[in-house]
Length: 264
Image 1: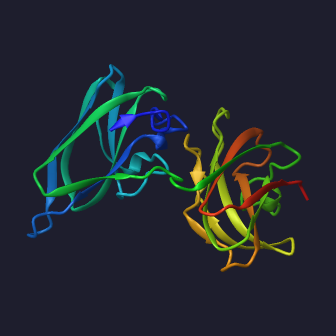
Image 2: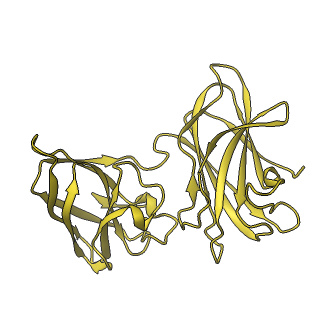
Image 3: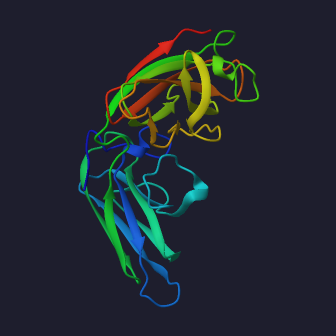
């Protein structure tokens, strides 16, 4: 594979880490008792870049880096070559992410996996692949629109974005705070919004977190058949009166209209 302009995301504290090449590793076993696989993964870069390989549970696109979800790691970034020991992984699927220390370090690489149980490897498409993408910038300002998390009665008065769909379409939203220091605990949610009335939640990124990669909703279908519909995306911090800028990315299969709303 290679790290290119869209796939050289840097290390785990980079907002672009998720752009790095990701692979689904599926351990199948040999048909006997539940097998555990051991072996080694190596990563060899054509350029003398510091590199790392990390293995996560799940076998899905990694959308947030959690140490608790990491099952193997080559450790500190090492120049051009690194290796990662695999010790007793159960049957199932895992995600392998290969990265350089800094973003935009371009190079071809060779990823080699050797295990003592049958397995398969396949590339995983990057987030939003094949979808339309919109990038919007905003800010939480104390005393204006930084209303805190769900324990606040004014949570829906955080920065809001109106989404209009002409037909049913799949969408997902990612919220990041790349310039904030320290990183605030954030979440992003999607609500139905009929006749300017806030309705039920349709999607959420889940618990508030301060991951460098931010938070994201799952792929969710908005709209019904060929009927127009409106939804509201709300970007919030856990703490009230947070002063921080943010970036909201919206991915959609079909064209949608998204507009920042003034505060109520």
